[in-house]
Length: 90
Image (cartoon, rainbow, N blue to C red; front, side):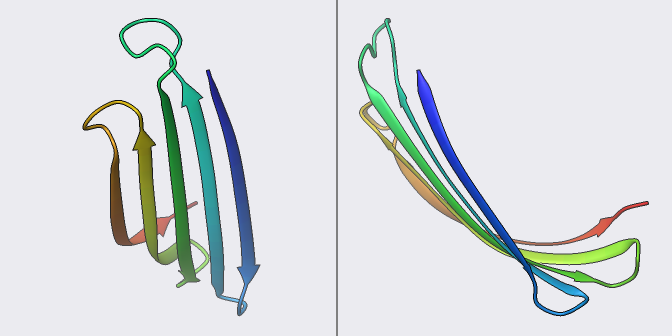
């Protein structure tokens, strides 16, 4: 069984620059098996900037943080991610 809560906010900072903030939490409980009634809690936050180079090309950069808390031994982790890229749309 799992429950997820998700939020997303975006703001046009300038006509070509868009900022976004995303966050989510997912909580789950295992039913049956070796991990019956064990729980997981997963959290993630992502901050992103997107700059329109042209109508069809956008440069993006962002940072994401993920964290998993778990009752299962050696399963928990946290990580930081930084990303850059170019997106083409038509």
